[in-house]
Image (tube, helix red, strand yellow):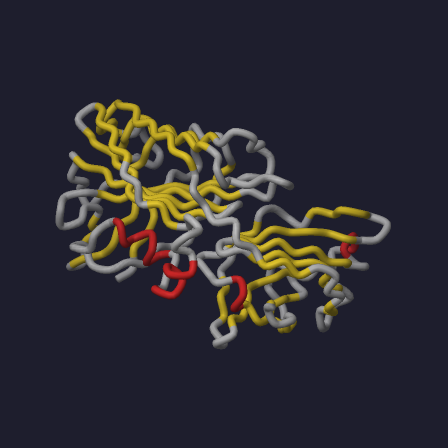
Length: 311
C-alpha cells in the first residue's frame, strides 16, 4: 500500500533550513503501529538493526507535548552524522479524506548548523483505502515526518541537541485561506544519539568510464555518502553524477538525494565534491560499486565503478 507525504507548495513555511522533496513513503496497512513507518520507509532489516544496535542509529524515546487539544508525540528518530529522519504521532484530530493537513510553522534548530547547504522536508503521510484517502490509523492517530540533512564540512549531528518546533495545525487551501484546526505550538528538544560509522576510501584514483572524471576519495555512512572527484571538464559542464550504489548481493540502491550542485574545491585541478543522502539505511561495508551517469538531467548512460573490498 503506497503512502504519500503531503506538504505545502508555493508558499514559504517557517523553517530554519531549506525545503526539498522527501521521497514517497511506503508502509503497511492502517492498523500498523506508527513506530514501524519510519523503519519501513528506510528499509531497516533485522541485520541492519543488529549491526547498529550499539551505535544509536535508532532512537525510540517518546516525548509527548499537548497544546490546543492536540497531542504530538515524538515516536522515533533515525540518524547518522549528516542525515536525520523522525516520526511524530498526532492525536486528537480525525482528518477528513478531502483535506490536506499541514503544520503552518516548522522550525528545526541544531547548534553549529549553518543555514547554507542544509535541507529539510516535512509532511503528513496518507494512503488509499477503499478508494479514499486515509490520514488516521486504526487508533485514530496521524503520522508526521521530517527529514533534515547537511553537507556542512566538519559538522556532525552526533551528540547535538535538536529542537523541533511545530506551530498551528491547518488544512491547506490552495489558492485560498487555510482552515485553522488547532492554533497551538508543540516544541521538542532531545539529544541526537546517531551512529558515526563510516567507511573511508582515500586515494582511489578510479576512472569513471565514458567520462574524464576520476574518483579520488569516498566516505560511505549508513544514510549518506560523500565523494570527491577530479573532473577536467567540470567547468565545461561535464561533471558525472552518482545515481546509486550496488550492494554485494547485487541490489541497486538508487533514488538518492543530493545536497546541492557539485561544489568545486580547486579550479586549477578541477576537483569537486558532493554529498548524497540515501533513501534507506545501508551497511557501508556491503557497498560493492557506484553507479554514475555522464548527464545530470536526462541521466544519460549509467556506468558502474567497482570499489575495493571492505577490510
